Image (cartoon, rainbow, N blue to C red; front, side, top):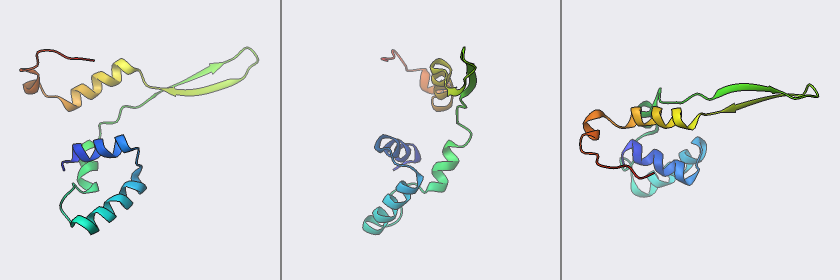
Length: 98
């Protein structure tokens, strides 16, 4: 499996780094080495593609301070599209279903 497929599988299954290491340890024992991309290659593939959240602060009338984080969906989607899809792949695109 490619790095992209492995990360999609782990994300869909909701596995964190430590749980994915346990899973791959058992899979490598059963199937042998070389069936999946290594964690090092997966991390290198996605390095620098993080979308940082916006940090904001809300002060209520009673002087309570609430710090919160959020990601703007439109900018996050635009950033992900720019990192995943190349201009050559867009040449044959006819429609997008969202």
